[in-house]
Amino acid sequence: MNTDKLLERSEIDDGYKWRVQDIYADDNLWEKDFEKVKNAIDLLASFKGKISESGESLLEFLKKTDEVSQLLEKMIVYAIMRRDEDTRESFYQKMYDRCGSLFTDINAALAFFEPELLAMDKEKIDAFFENTEGLSLYRFKIDEIMRKKPHILSEAEERIMALSGDAIDTADNVFSMFNNADLKFPEVKDEDGNMKELTQARYISFLMSENREVRRGAFKALYETYGKWRNTLASCLSGQVKSNRYVARARNYDSCIEMYLDNDFVKTDVYNNLIETVESNLDKYQEYMELKRKAMGLDEIHMYDIYAPIVKVPQKKYTFEEGKEIVIEALKPLGEDYLKLVKKSFDEGWIDVYENVGKRSGAYSISCYGVHPYVLLNWQGTLNDVFTLAHELGHAMHSYLSNKNQPFVYARYKIFVAEVASTVNENLLIDYLMNNTDDENIKAYLVNHYLEEFRGTVYRQVMFAHFERDMHALYESGQALTQETLCKLYYDLNLKYFSPAVVVDKDIEMEWARIPHFYSSFYVYKYSTGFSAAVAFAKNILSGDKTLADKYLNLLKSGGNNYPIEQLKLAGVDLSKPDPIEDALNVFGENVKKLSALIV
Image (tube, rainbow, N blue to C red; front, side):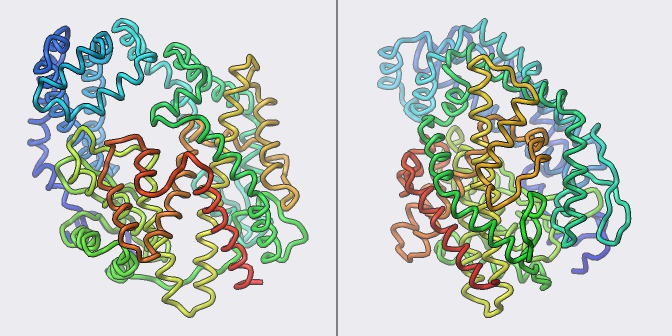
């Protein structure tokens, strides 16, 4: 298919479009479900005061809640997919917004549930389980709520917390609006000497320029612009931390980090071990930075040089059909059943392949219970697109296997394990491509691609995680989070990670001001743990030991039926210990040496 000209969606062959009609054949069916859910809100609220009367009443409530939640999930996914097909059309954005309002109303109607459940003593709940057929399905869900008993408030207090949600999100909303809509950057010179407006989207492409002055100019312009707003942005990020502290204190947690990690039943030791293990392996990271310096032929390397390519990007283009075949071959170590699912995704309308006018950029996987998952792509035919296909299919297969093997209540896996399946697929793809090419440049590109994934997903995210931990600790100890405090903390961390291999330019002290993930608190560390676990699983799968591969597939089937640390442990990777992180970083070190042999 010729994709040089950007087509209208109607001009693209249906064989390359996802079958959204597998969710709803038309919008009228969506509207019918909207009315069903809306009408169920009063029914859910009517269980107030009744769930403690009998096991049967509790079971009826839980089943009805699942039924309503499943419908709402289906409605949300449909609205997102239709909106993203053509973002020029506001109809589906409004449909999505209506789901958001409905979601808020449902949560308000359910506010009584946890306080009422927690008012029951353990003996009564155990008796319910013993005497009520079917209630045992919800044992883990209820145990999880009971575990959080010290942190769940009275019904009136929970209502206040629910009503404060929008106010608590203010810092995030202000930052998002400022960063994406209001903040304007100056023009900078491109490689041809022309003046181009610097934007968030163009920044990385400027940093990847082969012209060092282009890189330096964009770097300086970006951080000088953020620097002009340093006090405002410090106040904004401080507001996020204050909101976190408010919620943590209200919910009887000793610290913000304890509260956020408790959502996944992760101990702070896991978080701290991750940081300590990565920071005890900074020698490997600096060796990689030194290799970059040599490859670029520079006397010294600066922060604005880090993204510059040191290996030529392969110019070979891949049709989608070629990409499919490569991915199928690469994923063979996962077994026939997994491959059948991958082929099914290609044949049965799971994937939206090509860019069209108005289509959302990027790529993602999305799913709702009872319907197969979907993948959005914007295929351009690059090797990177092949990686994206493997990555998103990892998510899709995880969702499919989870939905197929778990009841709705446990079908959603935690973010903590979400990136494992996608990254395992990328690891298998790299191994396949490395073993099936004699082209030294492609080999160098693949190794460098792998190292850049490590750099961005492990080292960089752990540095962010360290910053988040210390920033919150400073505030909790009574220190104000001024721009001076944030800049010093962030700059010192960059010195720790990059010096002496890299000249740590003063401008980098403002980078904290542009990281949206700092408004999704204590989230980024999961990228690093997930990546490290994926390296271990890929190694196990490639060993050819079917038992190890089956353990991994059982992880994908387990959904959210256990705590993520326990799920990973059952599959053979114990993240409560530093060993998997250490092993992954040793793989990083080996690949630094491999790349050095290929390019120096």
